[in-house]
Image 1 (cartoon, protein in one colour):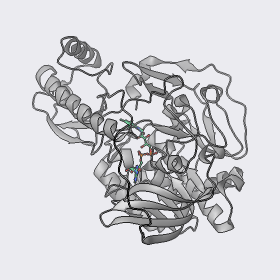
Image 2 (image 1 turned 120 degrees about the horizontal axis):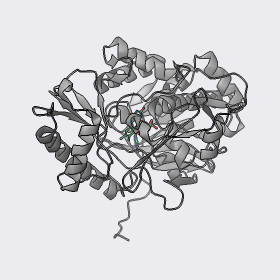
Image 3 (image 1 turned 90 degrees about the vertical axis):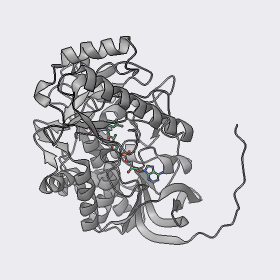
Image 4 (image 1 turned 180 degrees about the vertical axis):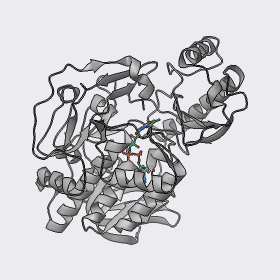
Length: 450
Ligand SMILES: Cc1cc2nc3c(=O)[nH]c(=O)nc-3n(C[C@H](O)[C@H](O)[C@H](O)COP(=O)(O)OP(=O)(O)OC[C@H]3O[C@@H](n4cnc5c(N)ncnc54)[C@H](O)[C@@H]3O)c2cc1C
């Protein structure tokens, strides 16, 4: 245990907001939540630690949007689609593979939030909730002018890490069963000035990568070099560093991970420039403002989805999000990536109860840290469904604030109906029988890994 200090008690803290709904964290989940709440009539405030929105899509430099489609059609046709259309209108999207410009994604996210009537407060870091029995009365945020308080009827935790839920005393899981190890972190980076046509095929790149690792020129546990084309012809995006053994919720480990991620980036640049054709004159274009965090806490909610539900393609009458993206687990302790695909044509659904945490009466959790196991998390965490899950939270929170209900008292089927009415590609009714085809365990599909 480190030494401790005591902070002065009874400090008077100004209340900056009295809202219907407060959303903590402006990533894909938080954008969906804030717009979803505001469009349904709630006075909504979005609190974000950075000076822009987007979360992993912008601060984490994650790209592209992973596909979450059924029958060739996108499933995330609500707020997520609006965000994409705005990025496209601003010239920041490349179809059909949906690479996007992160800077344009910041502009577009802010525009759609403001147009929906969301009040955004930037540069505030969550400190703690003030509780009133089993309810959150307000959240304390730390900004340039010190601590401020923000009060609401309903709170939505879209911090990615369930920071608010954890501090409010909600039970949660961390990482995989057994050892609690979470998926690794990755510092994403782009190289510009690449002669794309001269890049060797992936087999040759793989051989050179393995040789560089064997001879110590690269020290990285990842099994291959994962790269994507970007919105610009001469720019390549890399999602290939891998930092294991660090928790994104531990101050010291999170900081160490940043340094290790950038150490790996520097090695990759040297390797690519000196050993791989097409990269001889490449230069570092950009990196994430922070290392990408795939997994930390997952709250325990009123419903809980497991790998078995994924395999069965479980459907629910209150399924508020449909997902076809595979199980995609980057080995938490080293090399290898597990990909498990659903049978063609099938999907699974996330029931509303996965967004309603145990242990707090006026809180919803959206984005990636919802009540699912390690395997299902690896599938639903990608940005399109994370945004739709957020939208479901926002929709539910607005209904709760209007009616004076707690999220647990609300009928999730109503949330689903409202989302359908607002354009989300969900199937009315349910549950339906799952397709009978066996599921596929396909490691060779790792090229689409997130
Ligand atoms: C390396 C990596 C590669 C990935 N690749 C892909 C991919 O190719 N395609 C894809 O679709 N998905 C990919 N994903 C998954 C996806 O990016 C995330 O799962 C998704 O962004 C989760 O959305 P979220 O809103 O739940 O969380 P986040 O995107 O993490 O957003 C959380 C937001 O909350 C804010 N916040 C956090 N804590 C606090 C606090 N204490 N106080 C105030 N604000 C706070 C953050 O600044 C951020 O804006 C990848 C993820 C990683 C890490």
